[in-house]
Amino acid sequence: MIIESKIDGVVARTCHPLGCKQAVLDQIAFVEGAPQITGGPKKVLILGASSGYGLASRISLAFGGCAADTIGVSFERGPSDKGIGTAGWYNNVFFREEAERKGLIAKNFVGDAFSPQMRADVIDFIRTEFGGTVDMVIYSLATGVRPDPETGERMRSTIKPLGEPVSGTTINLEHDRLDEMTLPPATEQEVQDTVRVMGGEDWRDWISELADAGVLAKGCATLAYSYVGPEFTYEIYHDGTLGHAKAHLHATADQITEMLKPVGGQAHVAVCKALVTKASVFIPTFSPYITVLFRVMKEKGLHEGCIEQMQRMFVEKIYGPEDYIVDEENLLRLDDWELRADVQAEAKELLSQITPENFAEIGDYAGYKQEFLALNGFGLENVDYTQEVDPEALKGLQP
Ligand code: NAI
Image (cartoon, rainbow, N blue to C red; front, top):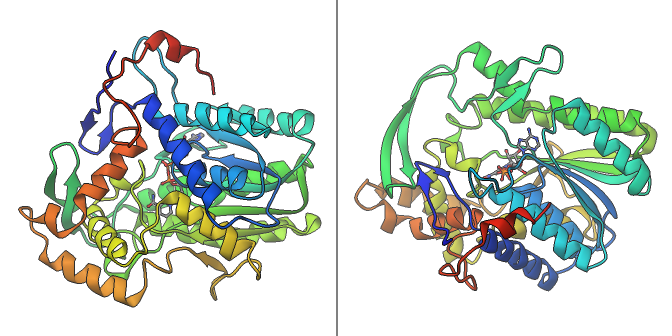
């Protein structure tokens, strides 16, 4: 069969396995040709390893200098009679193949990272087949739902402002259109639930269980990812439900560092740049900003995707001549180029010119859409999309 891209609003309904493979290979090629990480970790657990920042971290640590063995946990779907499966499934498959070709361990656990069984399985694997300990844990889960660990009740995260409604525009990728939208303010319950889903609680629980199981190596480091953004986006992000969750995540890093004292470890949050990932396209009013940001950063030679951000983080901000270059709030700032005054001034100026008629020309909409398509293996160079894909053969590919 021939696989074509299908988008509903901002959700991709299909993926191209060969394109996913190419995207993994392209990221590997990038880190292999980039300045290398020196002195990084050797045994890494990545929670949320199949796409976006988690996958980029995994590729960077395996192929960008420290040749780390990795365990990746993700929630993905394989091919079945109902469909082709998700891009992350194939990213897992092809990452493992390439890592094993290099002689590295690359174990994938596909299932719910919130479940006690998943934690037990991962711990068991570390003990029996991974040398007994990990020296880095990356927490890169992005999800809309988490079961309450006590009651099992499903909590949902929302993306809403606090106090007042916020109106703005957002890009509809299906129709290449700029739509007006108004977001009502969050209820107190929605704020609390978003904090519990996307804040630091589950990160802390994972580290606590790994520590209790004795599978954290001496000096073990842990990282989670966050976003801050420019001030004019504060009402929707930083001061909204997600921003509250991120504030909780930032505070949790200090608690985890305390918890890691017995093994001499430390926890950090890295604040990353706004990018197109399958999670970020849901943030209303954000997409026009990302298109102008892309244009300005590309014109200035500052544009980065997940893989460029992660390689720069490990090479320059964590394992550079100085370890852990952080700001006064102990955050690693990978959004330093995004927030540069000249970048922001130009992005804001362009944003003020955007209308539903001209948004594709004012911002880099072509680049934005290309990155969205690439997340699901479409629009990549060196892939023959007219080639027949055998659905039965896909079922033989295991993560
Ligand atoms: P993504 O959607 O590309 O990846 C999320 C990962 O979590 C996937 O591997 C998915 O399989 C996994 N996952 C979700 N629910 C799971 C579950 N129940 N069990 C196991 N695995 C599960 O997300 P992205 O954008 O890379 O986000 C990762 C982190 O980076 C988040 O904390 C996000 O807030 C942060 N970030 C993202 C930015 C962006 O622009 N996309 C900017 C700055 C930070």
